[in-house]
Image (cartoon, rainbow, N blue to C red; front, side, top):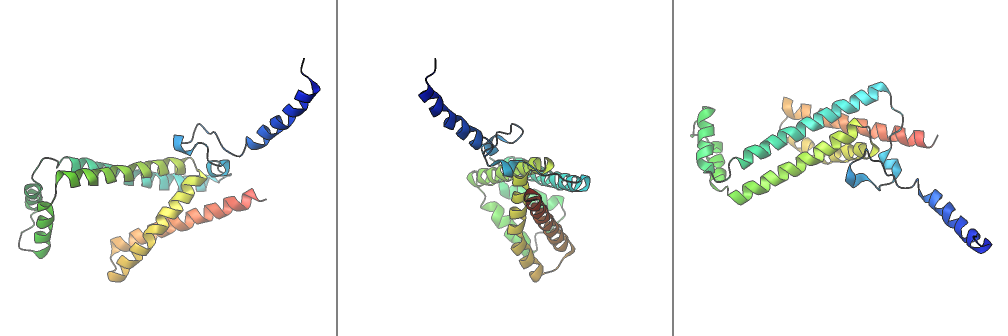
Length: 201
């Protein structure tokens, strides 16, 4: 039989485990590296159908970005053990671009300095970027708080560079990229403020 002393010692330990259990989430639906994070970063508050549709549209956009960069990585790796200068020349010929332009000379000089080591490094960077975008797309599709924070932070980082490019020259493409990124940043901020308000109701 268990002695009264041991029973008294066991009760505080049981109470402690119950209090600590909700602090960290063990969500099997979350990526492996996200398990063990505070549960308020993994759960999502109630969202409307329009908000979920917007998040999934952004997730699809991020997935597409990751896919394009991943294809670029494959293209870069296809240049390994090949003469980059010849490949660049063939590309210019295919696009019917003459070699009497200043930028073409710069392009060819850059191609001449390409090595297999540089190609592997660029491909690795592309793959890393794609993986990050895929994870972000997964989190946004599932309406996870950590993905919304990440989308807000990563989008904010790009804003100063986009503004700088617009100051240099305003083009339709630059302006469209800036407006789209700014809209995503502001929307993510809106969602996070809304969820924070819901959590304290």
